[in-house]
Image (cartoon, rainbow, N blue to C red; front, side, top):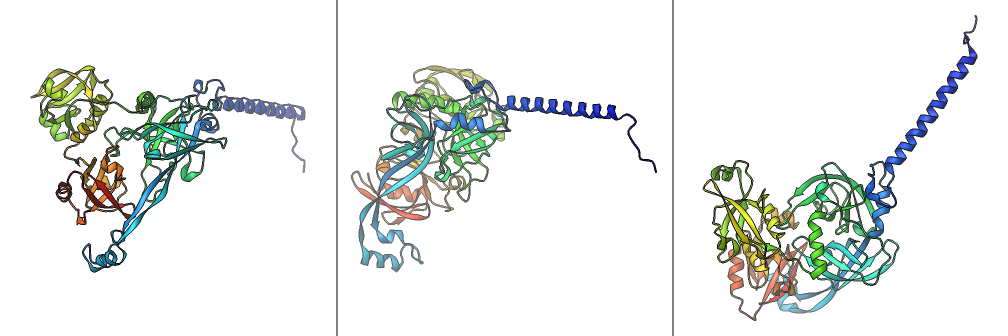
Length: 491
């Protein structure tokens, strides 16, 4: 049997060599191409886009500007023992009398309550952006840099309504800062990176995509969150959400979770919303917002049809407050506000955010639909105060001179504050410096009793509060997280 041989062995060898050479050259070209697309200019990271083959450059660019925050406050505890004990036969059973008779009032004790969070430097003067809930009421704040150095920080200003706070480390000049990007340019499906200290694990980097924009989660009148599936957990609060250019496009602030851990639904405050607030906090330590003087609601499809709003967009005026700008200008109940300063109004929240951003004293044109016809009013915006804001949420809460706003517990509020109860009265707002604030009443507290009287409805609450005279002290029993807390509040 004759073996089969190539007819031209030299030609075969030359062909094989050519194939090898072409493969090597193609591989080198492809490697160079990938290296180019994955790299970032060291002098200006925003000049090139980092593809998600590697998040290394994003981490290297932003991580040095991210800090771990430890806030500490002294909390007073104690009080009557039986208030922390729930007998098997309700509030009036013999176990309550037993504990009151034999234990009486226990002396108050002080203990330290600590919170962990994240933040990031925004300029060379030592200013750090974080969440308000990370440092609220803190007596001492420590920040830890990536290089391991720790420094004391002080509160510059807070804005509870958007959960943004600004703190400052004095005397530092050699740290790296993070740059704010354009959150309006984000697109759903775009890659983002979260950097922070989840569960105290410092400088953890996680990646995901933008899942949605403009999310409203019931945390306040200025909800406009970026939703992401980048892993965010307790301790990430206040840390940056970063795009693939190394720019901060959001401030991580909340998650949806039944267990307390990440389930792929996290929320960040958009950088464009935070930018003006940060500048105001830096300049004055507080935020000034515009006030129109109306209560408003969204248009349902039925209301839009009834009022002849074809695109269904706008905000329906439910009440006009006497003496405020809208009243003086001639706006009336049942007007539908469709435009402010030439900008289309999409919803009631859109109107609230737009008016809040108008400088106090500026005159703007407000276009409304009234009886199917468009009318325009010129209105001078005034400063919004806490008292006026409390009136603006009329119907969703009750406020007293104790400085706290309460509402009947709803499924939405229960989800917002992670409350297991299905009925009762919940605290939805506490005014800074008020009696409620001094008594350490917190948002999300469910009021169980006032002066040993059970509270189940707003009528129960109002009836008991009205009995408290000026200068008197009321005893509150609230459910907070998994247990009861007794508080004394002086009117």
